[in-house]
Image (cartoon, rainbow, N blue to C red; front, side, top):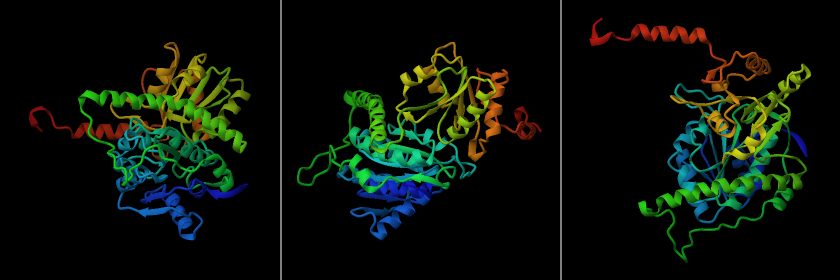
Length: 404
């Protein structure tokens, strides 16, 4: 039933209805409301048979989930920004051991300088850690993806990260259909671990692997990731059949079939992009949008099919690789024909608003040939401020040999 509720609260209630056995919690904005709400649900008795662990750090939170999952428990945690960096040592351990768990990442910029607002630099910094990574385009999809994430994690015996834009989604209060307990129970079977640590039948997991077998272990990890693409699609279809709404899956195309220009993006900007697409269509421009829901594993074939007839693609990056360039754009370029013009743009960093007017102007500038396709374009850059700072830095550089 639809009701007005904060995005974080809706996610917490949904996670609770997935019946986790262990929730490991450490606060960091903007995910704190999620674990706070789960604490309330455990304390009130609405979430039973759950061990709620308040740990000393984000590294401790993920380590607790690894231990719980290895012992045969359904485990959950949440984090953001510097928190996911503090987990970085443990992230590949969870995936390398094939442990099914779910983690919410309330996407937030990385410091320094400190910035608590939304972009995607936190999750994308860990894109090669071996986790499935799903991006929500709305609070309703964030709720739905958590149910699917537990199903996927346990079907594949892999960890799943559900990314939702910090503050933009986590703190937004809107109408959301939070699934009921009976609905979730019917969709998500009781947890049955494929492997677990049993004191009565002791085994070793995560033992050292030498050069004679390490390549094969990594190959199998890569193979399982790519094999997961079919499961992501199937679980989304199963969810639609059970809940009566389309959510999740690999991609979210919007009016792309006959488009001359398609904007590719992750996360909540898809709603504003759809409005811009509709407006520009009414003005006679063949524009579309392509939301990537499943970022890892990368759905190469599906992106290729969606964009193969599109002459011009705009990739909206809310994070970038310092010293290299685009992140999302690198994957898109692998998926399109060489003749396709790919315009890699960075905008919306650190919570800078992605307004309707900014997005509309971006598309019109691309159509007018004012945005290049050879280099990364910082579209919403304050050029005067940057020029002033670069001039100051140049004035402070000592001359050769240390002469003044």
